[in-house]
Image 1 (cartoon, rainbow, N blue to C red):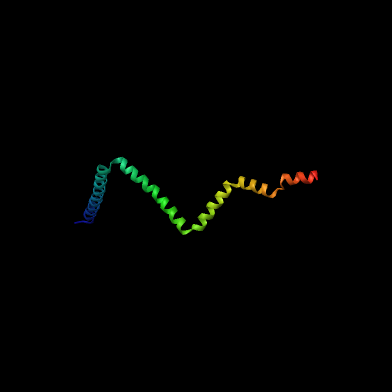
Image 2: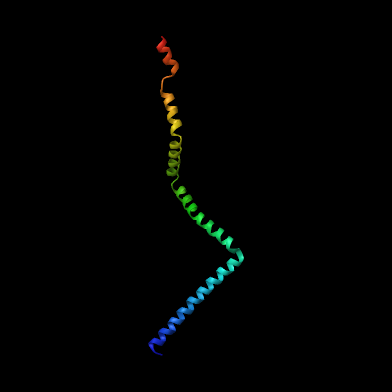
Length: 105
């Protein structure tokens, strides 16, 4: 057989192998669709996409708990900054009763 004949045979073998792999994958998807349906596949895909970042976040929290706690503490302080500043102002300012006594006295 000539070189071009061998090349054609090799290409046919590669084509047949690709077709067999495609058919196997297609039949698996078809069977899965019949079993779960389209809605089930969409729900499963969505849950997988949500779980991956959640699992990564849990891993980061477990490996750096002090950093996460510090960040959460800073956020809480930032959200409560107005009441905290008001409390410090009332704590540090002289009482209005004491001011009146010194003015009247």
